[in-house]
Length: 255
Ligand code: UDP
Image 1 (cartoon, helix red, strand yellow):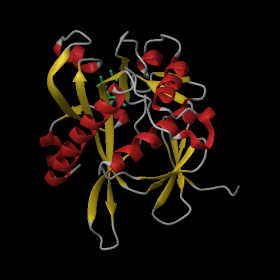
Image 2 (cartoon, rainbow, N blue to C red; image 1 turned 60 degrees about the vertical axis):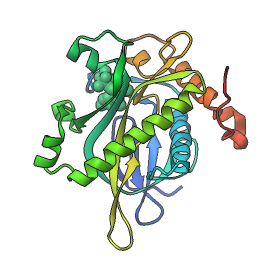
Image 3 (cartoon, helix red, strand yellow; image 1 turned 90 degrees about the horizontal axis):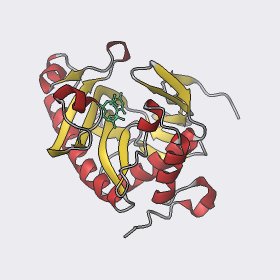
Image 4 (tube, helix red, strand yellow; image 1 turned 120 degrees about the vertical axis):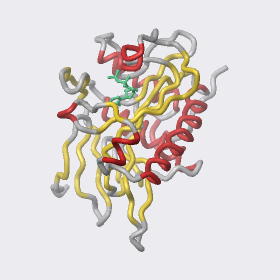
């Protein structure tokens, strides 16, 4: 295989130049980080599973009209995506209190929130991704008001859809993080599309019956069984790599 130009290397993925202009190849690593890079490790097989999980979820979201950067999966660890200009804002949607919101407001983990809460964080590792408001986003020019509107309404639609999808396979979607990008069409018209990934690296997923954590919190808290949890999410979605070419058979609903 010819060597491709590396565009960017992040904590869990590498972006390479794509085969055609306007495309990138997104490579999923096994590396894991937490607590703003203080904790580092490797979750063997995570990249393969996350590539499949994100492919599956992006395709399902596209079916319900969510614009995404995803084009197609290329192989075990790589997917072709459209090149976008990443908005430097992480959008977090929360349904049940967990993680940073518990500390911030002294809420017990697992408390259902009165309604889904959307938060914005400035995507900046040096600053540790600080919590920001719409005022900061517009004042500092990170996104324009109509772009914030698009990100907010898309995030709530994504939350509704994914909450139902995961509930159907016995998982509660506690919270998750999304990233968006600007995609320019032939007429230089811009639209906001879902970018990055949707995987257990950036979601909290708890088993409906046992409340067992099936996400990166297992790594953050040294709980063990991290790779197994990601594998189980993929299995319930019906997309484990072992199931071969017919692997995108969809979730099997449990009673
Ligand atoms: N999250 C993420 N990347 C970040 C920060 C948060 O993917 O840089 C996800 C995290 O996995 C969780 C949600 O966003 O599903 C909310 O995270 P929280 O603010 O509670 O922070 P954490 O406890 O993960 O530090």
